[in-house]
Amino acid sequence: MSDPFAAKPPVRVLLCTSGGLQGARVMRRLAADERVLLVGVVQSTRVFGRTDGLLKGAFRLLRASGLAYLTYLWASTGLADLLGRYSVKRQAACLGCQIHHTRDINDAHSQGYIAQCAPELLVSAFFNQRIDLSVFAGMAAGAVNIHPSLLPALRGVDPVFFGRLRGQFPLGVSLHRIAAELDTGQVIAQASVELPPDSSVLAATGLLFERGAELLLDHLDGIVAGDAGSPQVGSGNYDSWPAVEQVAALKRRGVSLWRWRDLLAS
Image (cartoon, rainbow, N blue to C red; front, side, top):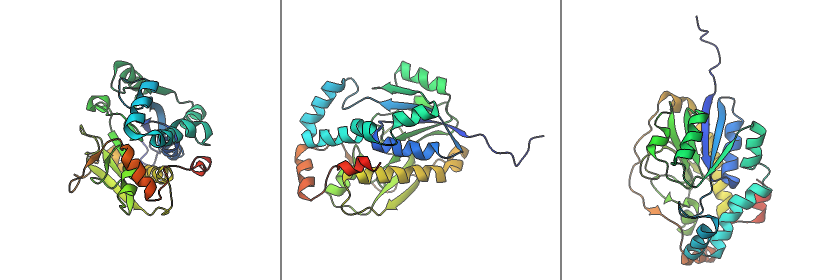
């Protein structure tokens, strides 16, 4: 006869992220909770398009958004992984967790890695790829995404950038089910977050992702039990990569994309 008071086995979680400060903060929170067992990490190597290599992707982003934004993106990912105290690579090594690097999570090689990990729940956080529903179709608890805005507002690539550009306050974070269309899935939980008014885009985004990880842990039992969430209320626009003119406009508003202290304090 089973013991009704016996501890439940931890939930087997696969984390999908682009790494950097944001991915490291989420990973740190999840790994510290005894109810979670991180069984694998899928880290995106995509910069712009699925078929672009690193140099071609960086060049296309440079043309679209300019040098200042390209530098910010590099600082929040590659540089953060090098300098950050809690980089995804370092945490994975401590956990004995293998990282699978890919430009396409939906290809056969990536799906083979995921099947080998045998996760129950897929968690996407700061992940710049569309995830086909077939990727998590066999997972008992499905898939959720942490999005740093109060959906349906500010869907898209860099919600904090566009929120600060438009002077939208407060900002917040949503935990939602992954659907076929990006950032449209049913919402499990949301939280407004009061951020320091002088915080950079990078620092604010990191804080929102960390709050999103806390929301995930707060609702973990419900997610595993099959909580489908609630439909998003209202409408929202999807913002792709910012234009050079928008990056300049953000600077005129006195908002920094990133600061060195954002990385050193991570």
